[in-house]
Length: 381
Image (cartoon, rainbow, N blue to C red):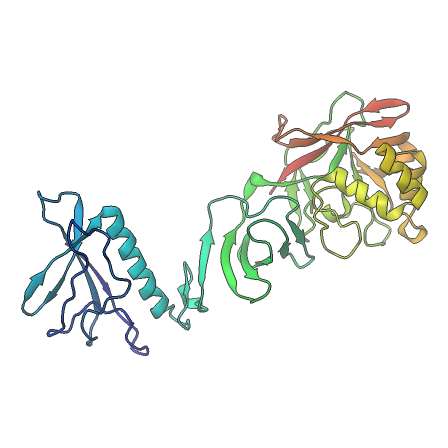
């Protein structure tokens, strides 16, 4: 026999569901045995509340006659009655429902009737679930990141919610934008599960885009914290721009063409799915209409386009710069004359350092030679 004892707070009223611990309380039997295994009323009163703890008693069924069933019994002064309410799965589901009702009534230590799973002391009248299974809450492109470190979710199951940092490393409260209620506590994956995507170019001409392990100290996701991140390999480069107009390009991940890019300079990531989409958006925003029309037809940035984008923000450009081997160089100084914006999806496509070349570009032209450009999702921690 299993007994679950729940002691109510002295400041609260008795719960609406009572399992008769008053000596003279009337016992009402659940179920009708094997013939009616699921005949369970939705609310049952087992006598009136008395001082002392609330007790739920679980007893076995009729042994050999019904070896796979359990009964839910209660005891009064006159003796014991027993009923069967179906199989073990059904009794477990019923007990979980009963306990859930009691938890919601009693709430947390300092709550007001709410049940915040894992954090009962902060109950707020609703149920808050935990997600600590190491998975991501949303996909890339389903959110916009704000400068305060929060994420506005605009697609998927959690659309209409905002993930707000809760003070714990990698921890967020998922808050409903309309009601302001916290719906979930979420722990983001740590370590090398974190990835960020900048466009990376084969500048050294070895026929592939090279990467490093997590050896560069750089704020690659643009949240104001320096990360230990992978980067472009020796001789290869990452394309950057100046979003805040301070004359310095590539200060952090918001100034790289990738999933964290902030093209419009509002302090929030724009939610682009990858670096190619971010570069296309920049061209559409910054270039003259006739250039935009040509790009829409050809899918390519030409030498004139690159030259305009190289201009400082004060001159209508965006400070387009290539970050290569710790230096910053203009694309024109490197001999770049064309970037093709077309790409193919390649799945995870991880290299020897674990960095994922998820989007394979159609190439770029440098000194008359076609080279590789990929959107590489660098690991960081």
